[in-house]
Image (tube, rainbow, N blue to C red; front, top):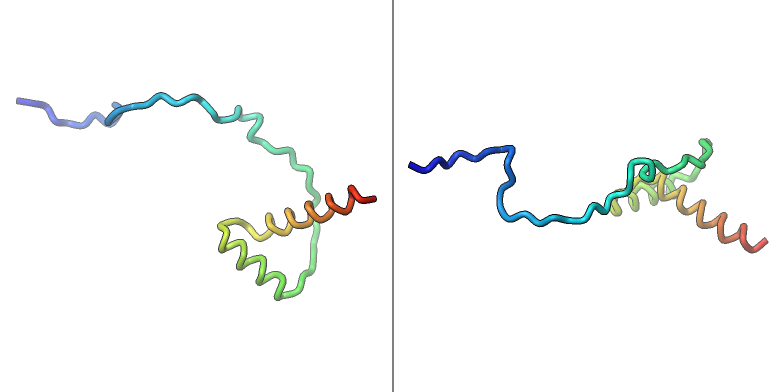
Length: 79
């Protein structure tokens, strides 16, 4: 009689070895080069960023931070 029990600690199906492409743990930690601020924005602007963040599956704070970074980088280089 054949034993058809599945051994959970064994691989199932055809396996393919892949190259380790993940960065080392020390490269996963991004340096925190940010400053915490309090910012007042209009309600329509806040609604816009929240809607866009939800649509693109991200956080609205990250979108605003990215916008500010790109804006300041562009105009910083012009002066």
